[in-house]
Image (tube, rainbow, N blue to C red; front, side):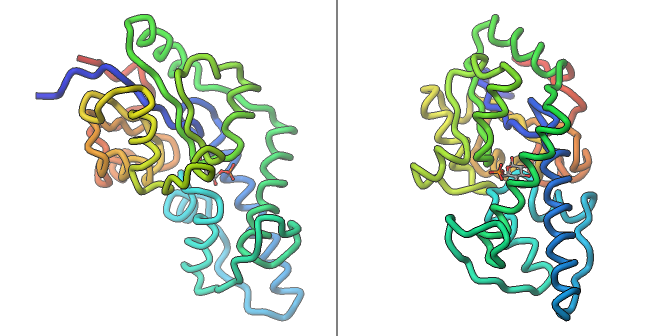
Length: 243
Ligand SMILES: O=P(O)(O)OC[C@H]1O[C@@H](O)[C@H](O)[C@@H](O)[C@@H]1O
């Protein structure tokens, strides 16, 4: 029987906010621009980045530079690591990552950021019932997104891409970011639920021994989420009954 769930740890992009699609769009802009550059410089182009296939497989839920390494490896491309201070036009892992961030910031500036209302309303209900809440994200833009959408106060703690770097917390699919959040909430993983839309995220939840791993069907399909560690896969949180 399932343990009593007293805490819930939510991923940000694609669970709380509609930003997963905006990240995917920026990634496509980055890899398309890089491919064009290769063609202009007489280098062999690679098979175009696909939002449907490559994003969930290599990028979704994963820290920025890890995602770049994953994707380039899938195309047999090796670039030097470079430095975090690299200019966005630099052909290094870090340079490409910085360029992607410019694309992402432009996308959210132009389009704005929206929350998933049903999920936010459900979280408010659980909070009112006494469930402890945390937000986690691989993204270094997490705090900014929480602020612009006004949902920061819903969570007792936040472990994001910036905090992970400071504390040297391994990125997903390692469970460490979720375990760190549970620790800060003062709860055991077995009595906590994690909510994720990414394959790397449900893998992390399953590896961390969490009481309930909920997959939100957004980019990755229901089947993929269940196959990779989700206990259930739903469209939104109104379909999840606790205890
Ligand atoms: O580049 P950022 O904002 O630090 O985000 C890193 C990753 O954060 C994850 O939440 C997103 O699913 C990825 O698409 C993104 O690449």
